Length: 155
Length: 263
Image (cartoon, rainbow over all chains, first blue to last red; front, side, top):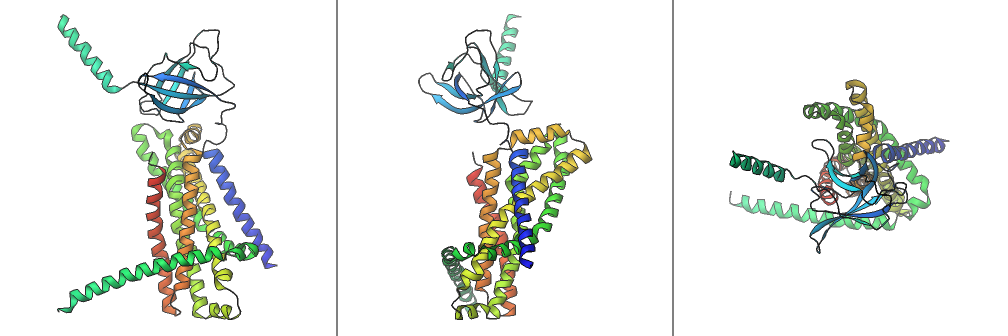
């Protein structure tokens, strides 16, 4: 008799614990919903990826359409090579223009896809070389100072 | 007082020796538990009884403290985040700090003081009243019959308790952040989901709590088994369980964090 109530309590405890784990996985973590369905891979070359991280989102018009799969350095061209895993539901024209953007002022970096007007679509394994790099604040300041200096020279 | 430095070094040497002796005995004891844990799974009702006394009985303290830790995190986090105009990131702050650190660590500390001390006292008292020797006389291995079920009960309970602690804490943060202060509910959950990674954060947190469960349960059963069979010995073994497990949890947490989240 006592053993059945004990079993009941232990079962209650274990199921509560498992429910908590499921809650953490689905509601708190990104296990549900973010899995890409039949992703295909595109490669994009950037002069500078800034602080882009693996698993950063790839967005088009603000909608997450994929995730960054890998970031590596190409010794042949001295460029950063970023593999994008794009959701198979979405197709993009061949003149799509990937840009490295920052969400908010201090947010994480992500890749924004500016869609072109070409009728041909990108397929898995294609490489995009027309890209826009991450903005590096030192270069911006340097450019600003250089412009100021050249303005001063003409006056 | 010429003898005092010699005494000091003698004492030091004795302590070091004793510590190493303890460590070796604990490792051998751990192996013995693993080798004799067949019974704990074959006669699983023994382990279920221990899950009841360690897990279910710790439920209230874990749930209540989880709720309050989450509520405090909500208040403090909001206070700091709103200075930078990013109070919507409250969900991220509460969830990440609970899932990665506070859930496993505080649940482990509570588990050590609520369940670990009870295990030590129980086994120590069994030793003091010579129940363990009586079992050996009846050809029942006390490690298989008494120690292994308690060990596995603790190991199974601890990750579940840590998950409940984290879930309850996030609920507490939600209560304070969204219902009391009025952070936007949508961004509270969506920013949390965007930043908390399943493999990186949640699975690592579960691994941590699992490791803490093994450590605390091992220390608890070992101190009980190793205690001097007197009333005084049992009481000092119970104290040692709580102190050693707390220190070991925090130390192991540092090591695990350094291994997991360095990237």
